[in-house]
Length: 466
Image (cartoon, rainbow, N blue to C red; front, side, top):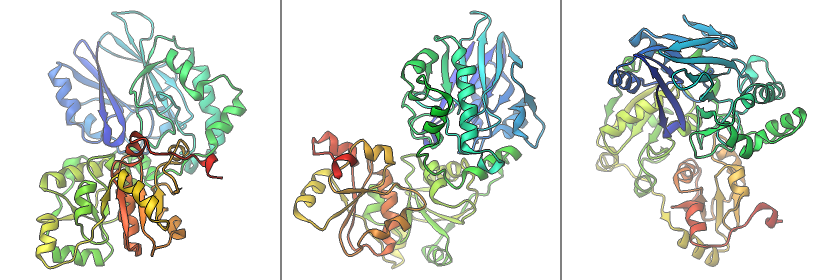
């Protein structure tokens, strides 16, 4: 058997190629599918099936393009209601690629149509060796149960289904069976996902908090308490996947725009999206631009912070970044990039326009400012669980998201504000959202809480703040 995981850090997304005797299946493909075609050809495999473990909400899949290019059959769980030709798989169905059996387990809970795919290499053993769990079982967590609300399911009902899927099916597999999920750390589809990208049933039975022995009603309460708000683009992406996305080659390349044109579009409400690093953004940027750097989980945060359908103008360090940004935006359903600033920020300056700045300060600078400036405000934009694990002194918690601006209303704009996250990426995005509100002195903490802790500086926890 040939088996390969493709991991896309931008979306914390894992997809798979499984092959045997000249045949292959791809599971949970990302939107741009060239790598699967190339890998299959390199291994002498013909892609026979494209499996989707569910209607993904956090990214747009390339299942239709991949099927069109290879002649493969698309496989969904029968409850998906996909609106294109596909195989509606049921519990216990078996499909073969060469000498490998791919057995379907219906595992609803994250979504009603969720399936897991048990992998049996008959040349090794008639028993299961791997299971591709989609968003049902992660390493260290399980899928959130609240994403099916628009289809008439309550989070409580979905959590109850998840309990049955876990205990009635997945945990009945042998402890040696390898677990290969669709997402890793950073995905919005879970709350406590490990940085490891695969595990075993036995390891998860021992270490996954959601699999600890507990009654179903307790599990339901645990899974539905303090679930973070889902990004607004999730329902739209799920529907795109139900219909099937168009090939990326059909998207037009954005136009190169003069600074004067960018200024005019910005005045019309277009989103100016600066995809450079926090350091480059801080050194000088188009006033009002949103900074989501390509160096981090760009697609997830762009999807969360920019409403789908918004016309976008890119600011990048070069045309290579423009092309990369267009592809990565399309992975979450953004297909409305209208243009990019030709010549970057230097052309903006050359045209006589003012630039804005966000000073980047070190954690040593922050500690000194905390001692010397009693009026300094510190805003921690990490997720609540990260904040609860420990934060810099005097830091208030407001997670990065579409509601950051309104939730930051309590802050005093005349007082200096230092924004901090885990490493400086999310905090830079937050400064770009807050700066246009009129904060006179706003700083991004480079290195974030990670650098603060590494320096041995004091850490507070919410219980100690009382």
